Length: 123
Image (cartoon, rainbow, N blue to C red; front, side):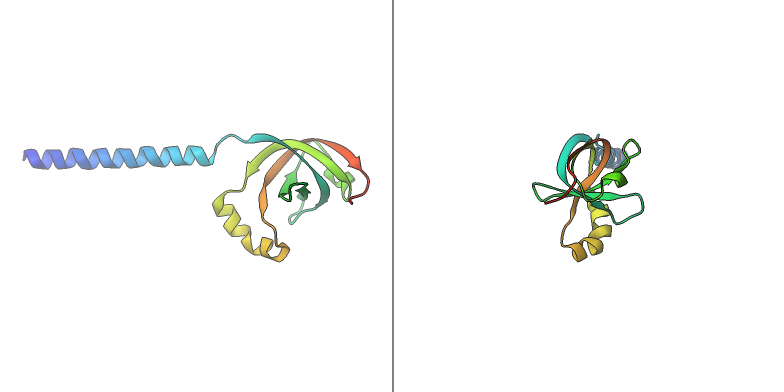
C-alpha cells in the first residue's frame, strides 16, 4: 500500500512539473516585443494593409500601422520605428511557401509607431 501511495505521489509530481514547464514555454513564446528601427525601401506586403521593408542588413520585416499612413510612402526610402514581434516557428512554417517564391524570410513584424522619410526614391 505504501508503494502505491509513493507511486501516486511520484506521478502527481511529474504531472505538476510538466504543467509548470509548459506554462514557462508558453510565457516565453509570448515574450514582450522589443522596440526597433529599420531603414530601407517601403514596399507593398503580401496581405491587405500590410507593407514590407528590407533593412540595410538584408532582413525583411512585415509592417502594419494604425498611427502612420504607410501607403503615402510606397517606393520611398524610410526609417520606421516601432514594436518588433519576431516570427514564431509555427507562423514561419505557414509562410514558408510564400517566402520561397521571394527567396527571403521575414525576420518579424513591426507595428510602426513613427516614420521618417529619408528619400523619395529607393536606390
